[in-house]
Length: 103
Image 1 (tube, rainbow, N blue to C red):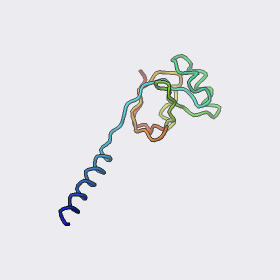
Image 2: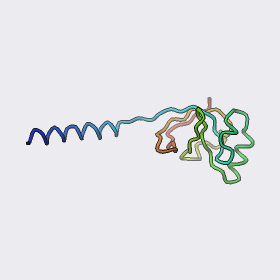
Image 3: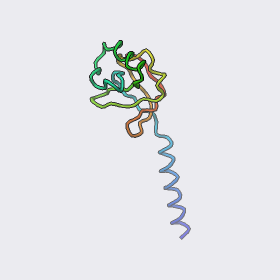
Image 4: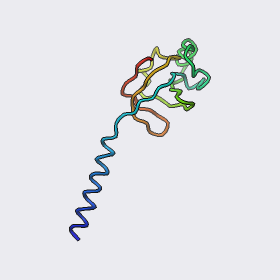
């Protein structure tokens, strides 16, 4: 009985340890806004995206046809309409960003 409990305990520690070690993932795409979404998924829409964000829209990332919410938003100021590489963790449709750089 003790061996079974110790084995189960060891497996649980390994499982949850692996979850804690899950690293960031890198996404590439174009910064758009929540109002226009994929309409601005090609570089060159800087003025429109920044204008929409100034009007209350949020920055989003359009990558491979998918739209991701971004947190924190302030990391994307001035990157609207530009191609970027975003590193972070994905939960549901939101990327919690650890780093962003223009491509």
